Image 1 (cartoon, rainbow, N blue to C red):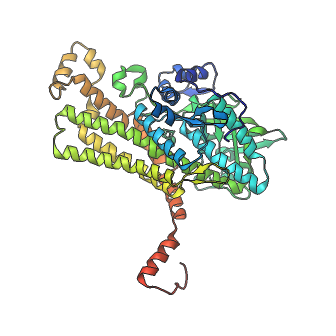
Image 2 (cartoon, rainbow, N blue to C red; image 1 turned 180 degrees about the vertical axis):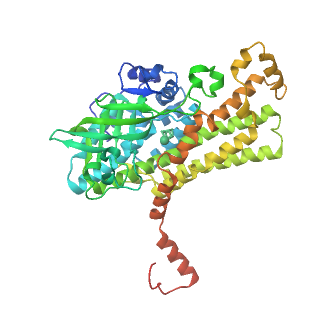
Image 3 (cartoon, protein in one colour; image 1 turned 120 degrees about the vertical axis):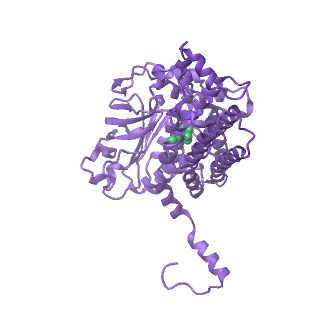
Length: 498
Ligand code: SF4
Ligand code: FE
């Protein structure tokens, strides 16, 4: 059973979701100005439409897609899969397939997976904490989950602290708030202070699930805190980051934006003495469990990238192939080979996402956890492959990706005809279509879309070194050595080490 049950469940549509965000009066800023209504904001609106796609897919006329986007909950009710606790390895595989479909549909980050990964990591870890320490966290977590499922909510998963001096532990920073911490505690609530960086989809979330950012030890209890809080809570401030090319949304025709419908956004989320009711606290000072929570959340999100980045990769491969068609070089053997290379690279990411899902195992809570070694290998590949894909797409498209005149030049009677005439590719393809595909490749590899496809692939869910640490820890090196010793006929154990 997932949540508590007993509440009537809803399966909202994209429009229901968008309506639910209106009039909340979030304290949010972008370029120094207050964002009155994120839904209507020209720069933030596309990212909210991406999240809406996760709701609309649950109502798809295609039963296969509907089945991917929904899941069964207790009492025979159907919920959106983005609020579901994975109950089998098959569920983990469906997650990756769903993310690939949505990545291809939006060509962007659809933002809802971070909170989903946080729900699953917390479900497993609260169960384990309670079993060892007799704490009341799992029941609280289940009640919170029931609320998220019944209302079909979007959760922001907040892990990454701002971290200040990277060489100093949380308690050793000049400013103690550079890692989010508990500053006050009473019988029925706690007060927290700090900030979480790079928060994907912050303004489109209903709830924020906070987790510690690293494994903690004795003396660091104030930082070992996990809880959920509505995005409207008093003391929360959202400062939206810049994306390269973001102002094209304000000043340019949709064609110059490359992908005007969908996008993503990230914010610095500040917790300025935010009060959290004890009922919503899932970890409070139990330092031994912070590392487990971090490792599981990161593992789930590293798995996620095997789906969503492969979906965006599909769009980039499609765009590169169209550019080759429009350039009249589709038949050249080196062009075909570069497309094959892109497909090979993209399917490598996807294969890793599927592999760590297939190897998922049941935990004591009943929820399934991915294979952590393979999930980290998946993410390690994601830190490299999209960059090579971007290079190949730019290679296939040609220099126009970075020098293309604006759609405004098409509208200008003095330049329009010239642009149409001199930027024509193969006969039978409109110049404007060729321009559109160049803009999409620019968007994904150099513009706003590159934020999600490139640096986010590198740093999201943990920078490359974080995966290498887990890979080093998870791999059964002693077993490998034993196998080698056996084959080489080595019977003696080495004097020291393994
Ligand atoms: Fe989901 Fe991918 Fe965005 Fe993470 S980066 S929230 S996995 S779409
Ligand atoms: Fe991400």
